[in-house]
Image 1 (spheres, rainbow, N blue to C red):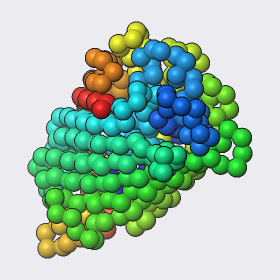
Image 2 (spheres, rainbow, N blue to C red):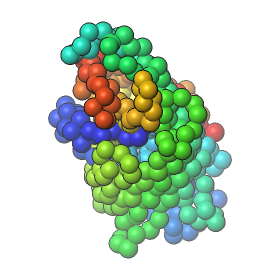
Image 3 (cartoon, helix red, strand yellow):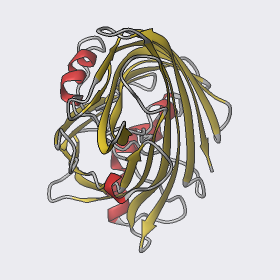
Image 4 (cartoon, rainbow, N blue to C red):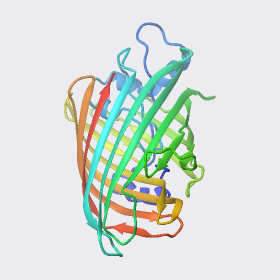
Length: 338
């Protein structure tokens, strides 16, 4: 949160191990089943046409589920009328690891919950509203003072509309947020990241994306958005998405297997000794894999594990840094449709 200052550098470590993962996104919008859809809605849904044709569980894993801390918003695939709300929650455990340049160790538990609501403005323009909360618990016994927890509270509003060219759409989103070390919402910890990107659906299997994300008052203010999503068949999907690229194979209608990479972290306003409103940067890069199990059309769970590297907690104004040794991690996730 207060997103990563070193996203570009950390991303290079993911691109190589995960079959040259690049930045990407797939755009989708809720499909009307009762009437002939108007043109704006059809455009917003166009990139999901191949998903609608392939009734396998890869649809669920490759859906556009917007991750906390991601640059590209993943939305849901074609869903039944009325299933326009989603609640997703995860917990990630990282065991205690020694610091590299100082004595002591740090262990971290990262958990978050996000609520999404998809609707049509004036009955035509597809939009998504999100409310999300993240909590990072830190157990620290190094000689660098760190807060016991970091907290992020974020709202998000995003719209998808036609662009000037054939098969091309524009997505614009704004994300008013608070990032601090407690549950009090200080005005000084308020930020408004936003993003805008174009989506070009070359055909039913291939979608291209390009744009930019902007993080006012962050150390890294601009981040380019570029990528591709490719679905060669109804079993395999390459989602080369910024911050969380993944390759998914649908074993059957219930189970998907996947490899993925991701990055966690951001910038949080904290207090240190007698100093207030100092910025703590938190960064981790993940590489792993796991399985998603779909119980029914409403609930699915994901269990994954892997290895974590490029880990550090650093005060932006040179007030101390803790670089941590590489570590395994375990993550459990629940996704519910309503």
